[in-house]
Image 1 (cartoon, rainbow, N blue to C red):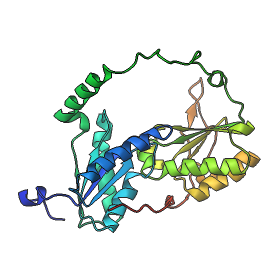
Image 2: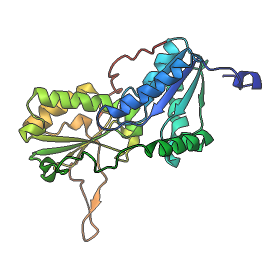
Image 3: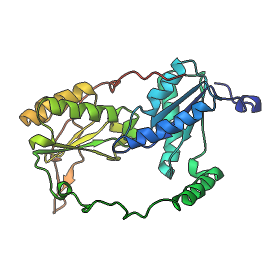
Length: 288
């Protein structure tokens, strides 16, 4: 790949990816969509798409590949959330380089925009938001008579507690789509939280990122890694229905020491298995 010259660096990109952070409900998607629409309306770039770094879909590698398939050869990725923590600043270039290598995109140039919080324009936007707030009602105006819901005061009944990572590194491997697939499969089998059988929660980083996508199932302490749709289906059918952890998808935990300092087997005693590539949750096509 050639090194950028000043002329090349000044060239207008033919694709822009706005990178957001996901969350609960539809609001993160709606906010990102509004930003994408605003940039598209400027008419400066042929392709403008949104992606999520975590807890949302589509994930960044999938959108990059879709932009390239649509003909993009110079792409700008712009994080549109604050703050962008140090570890994420260090990691973002790595995941882009890995994606370019994985898909053999040697002729594609990718540029990372500065973090939104580093740009002086953000201060002006924040000042405008504060000024506009002067016209809004006080928070207690039209408030409901009772703000607290009893639903959130009780621990739901459950036999298994599944922690499914949708943090940045697992998300780029399709973990958010896999989390949705898991919930669908549990609902089909009548095993979701309403049944008192499996309580699934999505989490941030669970630490062993290189083993992702990762899910931990308690009380068994079973760590599953390199998950794909087939693996999720097998875990639902075997572990959650029959109580048998699926060994080919388990990842070994470190050997632990007892109170006397003696080394013993890890609680789940799992052996490392092979699951193959993470499955592609579905095709994404950019709008241009």
